[in-house]
Amino acid sequence: MAALHPRRVAWEGARAFVSAANTDAYWWLSDTVGHRLGPMYQSRLSETRRRLQARADAIHAEAGAWRARLDELLDTHPATASILTQLIGETTSRLP
Image (tube, rainbow, N blue to C red; front, side, top):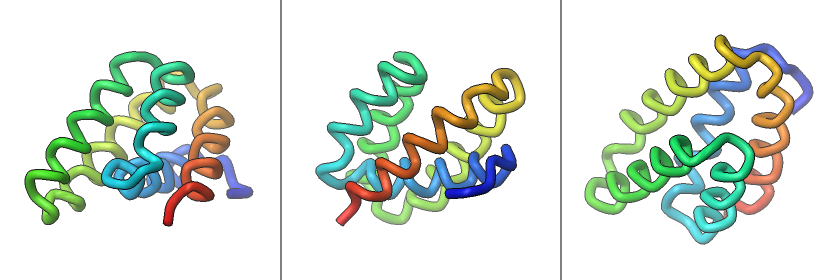
């Protein structure tokens, strides 16, 4: 992903995180999110995984929640854009 526009990063991050939450990439992403963004985001990813496993149609609600969550993160900590961009790229490459 070339652009670092915060809203685009948040959208791409939401899409990648939710897509990975119900695949084998989840385990790598969960650990990496915990280390790079903190335990709160790791916990939220775990909640997303549980919701998606319970209801496949929750994908849109989860993507919206992650977009808002990442928008807020980028608003309060703009320097995380580069970290998120790396996470998005690596996560996307691990998706089936």
